[in-house]
Image 1 (cartoon, rainbow, N blue to C red):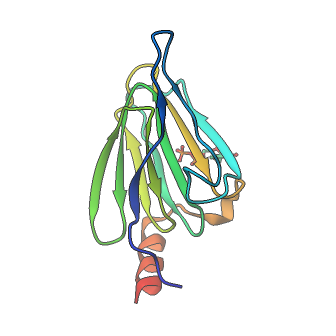
Image 2 (cartoon, rainbow, N blue to C red; image 1 turned 135 degrees about the vertical axis):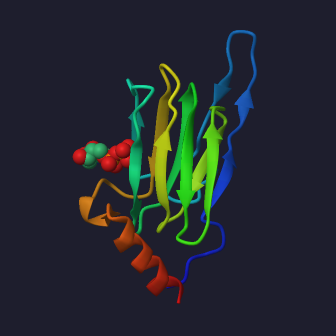
Amino acid sequence: MTIPEGFVREIRLPQIHDPRGDLTFVEGGNHIPFDIRRVYYLYNVPVDAERGGHAHKELEQVVFALSGSFRMKIDDGHTQSEYWLRDPRKGLYINRLVWREMDSFSQGAVCMVLASQPYDESDYYRSYDAFLAATRSNRA
Ligand code: TYD
């Protein structure tokens, strides 16, 4: 199986602007390029915490900063990039076989993740070397 182009990309959600407060919505089958099977969120994150530090064998995700901001460091096995998430309308789609690390959380930041599969520890690469080996054999 080959990896489609684009390990990460921005997903832009609609915003209904209103003096009473803004509203953004996500529709499965419309805004997200997979069936949403799980939603989880990170909160009460200490500002010096580092999260992530893994890749997934099959899982695809879209990550949002619902409140506050944080940094996502992305590594596809060849190149590294980083993204600051701070706009609740803009998510970061992360394909399978992408190493991610998250840090620099602002006080009170909330990170919401939409995921293509239920939680499965056997889908994780928690070793960077194992992840690199997998990207090499996958993209050979
Ligand atoms: P992990 O994915 O390593 O968190 P992060 O990437 O945000 O740093 O998960 C941390 C712990 O939570 C780990 O023991 C697995 C557990 N977990 C679940 O039980 N269900 C889930 O949906 C997720 C995302 C994690």
